[in-house]
Length: 67
Image 1: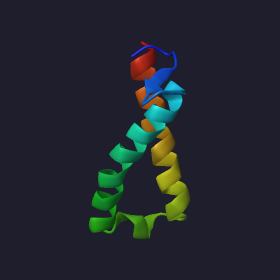
Image 2: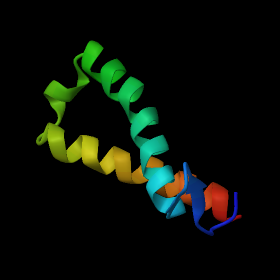
Image 3: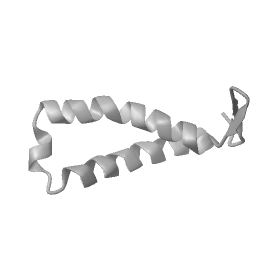
Image 4: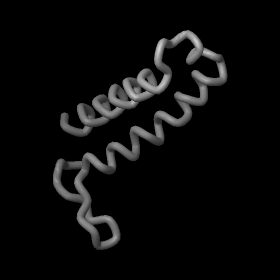
């Protein structure tokens, strides 16, 4: 996938928006797994932690696509 606009049902979409959706879909099972084991109880700010993990997943996806 190149870093050009993607034609999605006749609408040109920036590739970062598709990568954000993919990162969100990857984050859902990760968040459920962490919540299942009760690991979010040990984090100071759970929402901030989940957002940080989302940013890490998104940056990994961007790096994989850009290389």
